[in-house]
Image (cartoon, helix red, strand yellow):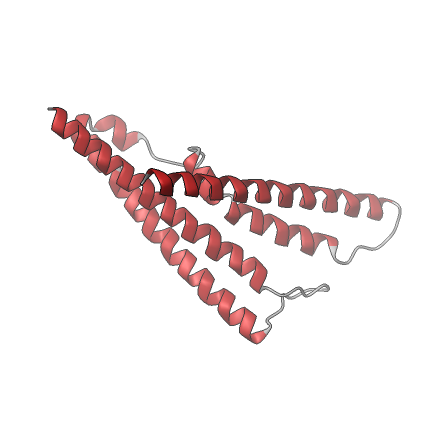
Length: 166
């Protein structure tokens, strides 16, 4: 289990770095677009490219955000329930989130395969292929679901250890 968690931590960090690079690139592209419009030139590809990069960054950073505690969570139930019941109740939202992420990842994979096979393109002036954008949904959501599974297994293992000490 430790080896799997270490491997996942490396993958999460690599995707977070890639997401950061995509965000910096989107920022530079938008800045270029503003400067270009400021001197009276037309822009054609900049906004579409920046949007594509930001979508990719959002999904690719999702597993890292989960590991670092950046996802939105509801602490009300945790504060109302104490002890063992509260800790077990905390697993339900993780299981539901895991199921949602798994579903979105599978849907993203299906969209990716379809878009790749049909050479589907986005609407707009630039018309890039859409399968790279869809693939970030699939990769990001499936890895986020896997990270939830690891979190759930870690929490269950910790609870078993607590029960043995009682």
